[in-house]
Image 1 (cartoon, rainbow, N blue to C red):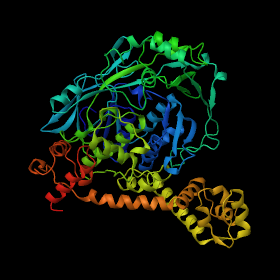
Image 2 (image 1 turned 135 degrees about the horizontal axis):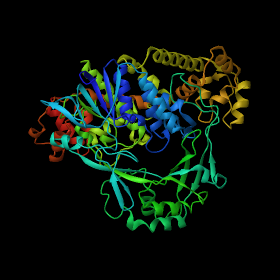
Image 3 (image 1 turned 45 degrees about the vertical axis):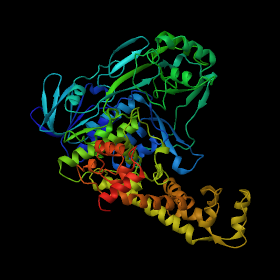
Image 4 (image 1 turned 120 degrees about the vertical axis):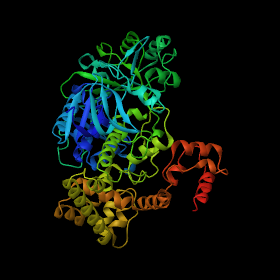
Length: 623
C-alpha cells in the first residue's frame, strides 16, 4: 500500500468522502480512502434522516448518476415521507427517517464490496505538493502515500472546537479528536480560510419519554423510495416520529443560562447555519413566539436512543436538562448526551473551479463542509462530483460539470464557486430558478445518460430509465389521441365540480384541468385498460401525469433556460486581464479578477457584477 501510487486519495469518510471514494473507484481509478476511524464511515453526525426540501432532489440526483446515497437511504429507512405533496411537483421532496447504525453499516459494506478501493485508518496531517501540483499525503505517523489526485472531505474536523456552556475542547465531533496540520499548510500555500459553526441537540433515552402526550407523526400510507434501482422494496412497516412544543416556561429556563452560553458571551465568533438555528438563537431572534416545535425522531428500529430535532444547543448541560424536563412528554427525560456546538475551519469555495478542483494546487479537490456547506446531502453531492472529476483528470478525460438547468447539484456548486458563502450553505428549492425542470421524479431522465457516459451509472440503470421514458411518452400520446364521450366524462367532471363537456373531447384536454387527477381519469375504462395492458408502474403513471398537467410550465421554463444558456457557451479566456477594461466598475473588476469565471453566464451571477458590466465585457471580447 505505502509503495503504491494511487490515482485518487480521499481524505475523510463522511458522506462526501464515501461518495467520492465510491465514484472514483467505480470509474476505474485505484483509490485509497483514509479516515481517522474506520468504525465511523458515513456517520450521521446530526439527525438520523436523509432528504427533505430540495435535499431529497439532490439524493435522487446522486442516485441517478450512479452514487450510493439513495440506495443506502432505502436499505436503512425506518420511515418515508414525500414532503410538499399538496403543492406542485417541483416542490415534492422525498425524505426518510434512517436507522443510524444500519446506515453506516450499509455504507461500509457497499464500499468494502467496491473494486479498486483500499482503506487506511490514520489522520492525514499534511499534503505533498510539488511545483503547484498535488503528489500525495502525509499521515500523523510520518507515512507518505503518493497519489495523482487528492480529495479533501474533512467535515467539521479541521481544528474542530466543541463548546458546551463555558467548557470547550478540541474535537471533530463528540468522542472524536480534531484534525490538525492541513489548514496551516493550505494557508501557507496561499489559500484563504475561515471559521464556521454548527450544532447538534441532546440525544435522550426514548424509554423515559411519554409519547401519549405528544402528536404522532407517521410515515406515508403508500411509501416510495429514493433509488431508481430495485435494490430494495418500499417499506411495509414504519416507525413513527412525534411532535411536541417548547413553552414560555422552557424559554425562561433556557434564558437563565444565556450568560454561560458561548453563543452570547463571545466565545463563539463564527456564523452558524441560518436555517437551522439553535434553540437559544430561536428564543433570542423570535422573542414574540411563545413556543417552538420539537420533532422527536427515533435513531433506528431497535435502539431506544432518540434525536430531539429543534433543540440544537450549546448551553450548559445542566440548563439543557432542566429546560427539557419542562417540555410536555419530557418530564422524566434521561440524557444519552448533551447537545453541543462545534467550530471548524473551512475554505471559501470561490477558490475552486466548477469541477471542485482548487485553482491554486492542481489535482487537489475540496468537497463537503470544507467548502462551507451544511447537510449530508449537500456534502454527498459534492463528494460525488469531486470523485468523478478527480478520476477523469487522472484518466486525462474531459471534466464533468452540471449546469443550473440540469441539476440541483449544478445550482449548489455554481452558487458556491461563483457567490461564495460566509455562513453554512444549505440548499432550498428557491435557490433553483429552473425548479420545474429539476424535479425529484425526473432526476434519472436528466442525469442517468450523463452518468452512463462517464462510466459511473450502470447499463442496468440506463435501460430502466429508457423504459420509463418510453412508457411515459407513449402514455402521454395515448391521452393526446384518445377521446372520451360526454356520458363517461361528465359524471367524473360533475363530482369534481368541473365544467361538463357537450361532445367527445380528447382525454389530454380533460386531464389538463387543474382539479382533475390521475385517479379521476382512471375511472375512464380506456385509461385503466391501457395501464393494465402495458403493466405500467406508479413511477411511469406519475411521470405521465406531470407531463400532461404541467407541460405548459415545463416548456416555458425550458425555453427560458435555453435563452440564458447561450451565455454559458461564451467562454472567457483563461487568465483574462480585467484590469484593462477601464469602463467596467472597479468592484466588478475586483470580483472578476478574484473568481476568474469561465463563462460570461457565470460572470453575470457574481455579486457586484451588473448587467452593464457584462455588456462592457461582451463588447471588449468582440461579441
